[in-house]
Length: 369
Image (cartoon, rainbow, N blue to C red):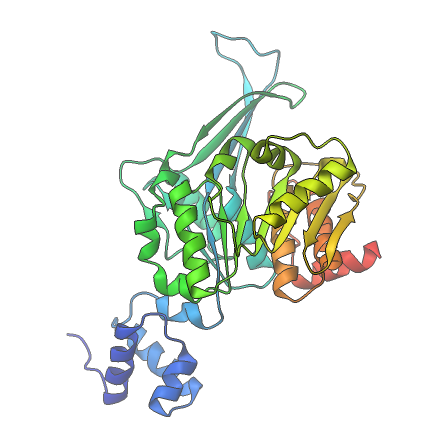
């Protein structure tokens, strides 16, 4: 038999029912109670089974909402020379990946409140991703699609670690539709920042850009590869950030970037489309970062010894850029934070470095100075 609710419990229950994202502070003000009292009453409702989810907690601090890929990455390295048409002995490893997911974990480790919105299958691959991710981000908004496989990237490497063939199953992300995101309008309209990768369909990215403009929310677009640059929305006016690499910018504008002047010109082209802040990374030549107020700034790459794994370095760069910008830093410090986090990630065997925290990133930047 269910325990009856008290009068105060009923009042709070009704308010949460109307708005699952209401904060404890808003509840306290509405009912003239202290926030600790509200927390105790909510604990009682949870214990009684009246509240099963935790959606109302999401607006305690504004969330960064990351939308896009969450993959299972598999690496198979052959032990001898690869032979086609027969069985090859291998060593295998698996890890979590996906641009949006990696950025979400970086930001979560940096102490930001993060929600991941993605689509996945109802399979063991998603269970593995969920287990690895849940400490750093809210996963309540993930859409599980029956009959679809969770996104995966499989790389077959030769004895020297060079790629023989890669297989990407990203079909499930076509399910991240505008209709799916319309169900998250409360979460998105209150987002501290929306971060979307180009695993999302073009119509979804166009919807998100329009939504961000309408609700005055900052949005950052993160390309994932040159072939997916055709998903860039037609109208980029008002985009807060675009973080791209040289190849992706060359593909979009159908140009070649062979020197510093061409590199700067590409940044100016992006800015002319109405984007507020733009980065073009260029491998060992570093990164250029620009906006119309502070101009164009070049951040040389940090010499990194003992590189263990290049996976996730770009996502580490993007995360630190967004984090530093949200903390009010100038372009020079924003670019520096990105370069430092990428460099430290290259020295880690993990896609997201395990020692990352706000204090550690600050320390790493001070050491560079």
